[in-house]
Structure formats: structure tokens, C-alpha cells
Image 1 (cartoon, rainbow, N blue to C red):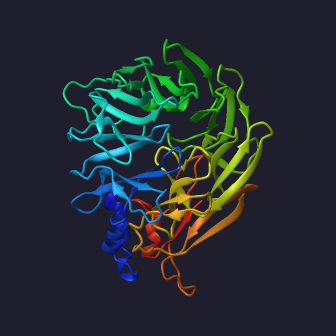
Image 2 (image 1 turned 60 degrees about the vertical axis):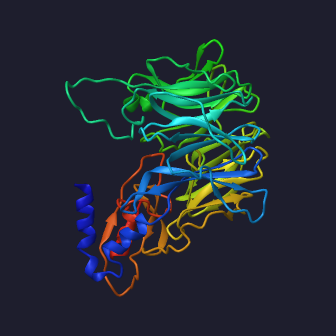
Image 3 (image 1 turned 90 degrees about the horizontal axis):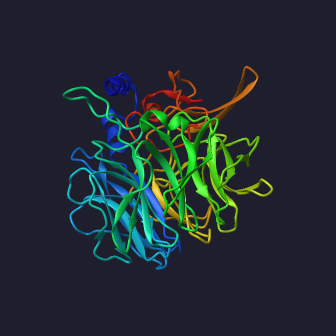
Length: 463
């Protein structure tokens, strides 16, 4: 119903606008979608996933992985697997940068399995033979184990934002818990290590490889992300220790380089994935969490510890995206880059090499279609050119600031395409997100993106 209303809204103004609805939808559906970009720890290899195409030219749920050797100037990207395409995604490099792990649905059964492959490329090795959904593989720092999230026997992907399975037959509730699982690389043995009644959302390895930190809640994972707590679990014994029970939502747990602290982002978040708030750190053994960004005029959205002991993080600042570093000891931060655009990299926002000198991400804005970029912070080089021919079909943007009930408010205003001051135009106000999220300039990725209405003679306001 929403789709038909949206198309009807576009169709009613098509006659007065330069771009027809078919042209607009063709531009959006013709945009190559990059779902992740990942750097190897040594900064040599850059991998990304590209969405395949359906018969109607729209982006498919299936994807393929491409590799680029950054150590060879002028090198061309190569597909990870030159055989018949299948759904490959969730790239993770080994700590020594000699192997790549990924998920792939080779048998077309609708559920992925875990594979590894030696670099530059070789025959892939299948590590799992499971029934259910796998997600977010991550190597242990010692390179001996790969952890991943696993929902056994689930009829669909996990997550509170994934459409529920339709009822059929006798109606009953069956809870499928997403658990932490480990694959021992020498033996190939797989085991689930978190409790069967607990749903795990995010996790991270300790530098010592002997334990993991994770966020989780008991019961239905679709309903209980908002009350998730922070725990650690020992690999050998399975001993679980509560670390932190937040008053609000929690996301992005990350161990410090010395293993003594766990940093995370805490705040009022509307949904899983709409991450924002303040950066906190808590002792890995449990205790009081310390706010490392009190009073900050921004909303941090992702973080990662650096070898130096500083925290690299992204944040939303005045409707823009910024990269910054934070020294937990004195809470002093430094902005490295800021732009009116959106950065994405799959599970992360940016991927960074161990030495912190090279970063990779997918950059896009209202005027720049998504492409993979990599290089020094703020000096990235464009590494893909799939969308070079695409031009925006919508109008220019303007950042606005105003006051409401003595509170500062900001927003983005998209002008109609071919705007003329002598004409009157209707306006659409898009109210979206939550306290922790904000509208950032981004290339429309779907037919429901309100930005495209500016190509059809509307002002579009994103407060």
C-alpha cells in the first residue's frame, strides 16, 4: 500500500517536472549498491561486496566479493570467486592478512555457510555445515578461531528489523535465539558457547583470544534489543560474567588493546542499527561505566580502539558525518575529517588498518553516488567506478538552523530540481529516525527515500 501511494504521489506531479517517474526509478535501481568494504590488518588488501541484479535490474539480496591489492599501483579489482555467482558477504581478514573468511550460499539453499580462502586467491575451504543463519564472522587475535553469530534452524534472518515469518498451520510462538558460535580452525569443530535462552546482538574478541564481550538479552531477540546488557564469556570454560547493565540502549562493544576496558556507545536509540549517544568505557571485569564524551555537541555512531590506546570514532555533527579520535585518559578529542555525506562499510562505518594509516569506506551523498574509497584519512582515493555515469536527478541541498521552544533545531532542505524563485512549490516534511539518529546527505537507495520527491517539484525538509 505504501509503495502504491508513493508512486501515486510521484505520478501526480510528473507532468510539470523534467524527470519522469520511470527515469527516476531507473536511476535509483541502476545504482550499484556496495554493502561493505573491509581492509586487511596490514592495509594491503581491500575487499568489498557488490549487490547482484534481479531480472528487473533492481538490487538483489545476493552479492559477490571483490578484492583489490593496494600494494600494487594500477592493479585492477578481481572477483573473489570467478565461478558462477552466488551470495557472498560478511568479509573478515585473518590477523596476519594471509586469509579471508566470508559467508556464502554456494548450494543456493537460502542459508550461508562459513568459508576461508588463502590470499591472493585459492580454492575456498568450507568450515561449517549448519542449518540456520550465520552472521558477522570475526577471527580471534591469535588466528586460531573464528567466531560468528548463529541462529539455529531459523526460517529467516535474525534481527528486530527483519520481516517476521508468516504464520502457517497451528499458530504458536517459537523463539530462535541468535548465539555466539566458534569454529576451531585446525579441527574444523563448531560449538555454540552462549546460553540457549539468550539472544546475542554484537560481540568482540579480547586481545588475549581467551574471552569475548557481547551484548545480549534473554527471550525474543526481536523484542528485547532495547534492554540488552553487556557480558563477557570465557572461551575455555564458558563462564559468563555480567559487565554492565545500562540504563538506556547499548551498542558497538569493543575491547581496549590491553583488554582491561570495554568501550561502547550508549544512549536513547530507536532501533538496532540507529546507533548514537555517548561513548562509555567500563572495566572488563565489571564496574561503573564512565562517560567519555559528556556534553558533546554530536552523536557518536561507531567506534574502534587503536593500538595507540585512543578511540577512533564516527559521529553525526550538525547533519554531517565526522571522523575523530578520543583519548580516554583525558577525554580530549580531535576531529580528523568532516563532510556533508554518509559513510558506510557494512558492520562498521569505516574499516581501518592496524597501524591506523589506511581507512576504507563507501562514500555517498545527495550529489555523489556510492563508491568504495580507501587511503589516508581525508585523502581517500576512489577505488571503484561502478556509478560514475550517474547524475543526481534532484535539487540542491541547504543546511538550516532554527529555534523551537527555546531549543536549537537543525535540518536539511532539498530544493526542487530546476528551482526557480518566481514559482511556488509544495513541501514534504520527512520525520524519521530517533533521538540518536539523523538524516545525513545520502544517495537515494530505494524507492521510499523521500529525497527523490525533490526531482518531482517538491521541497523536502528533513528536520
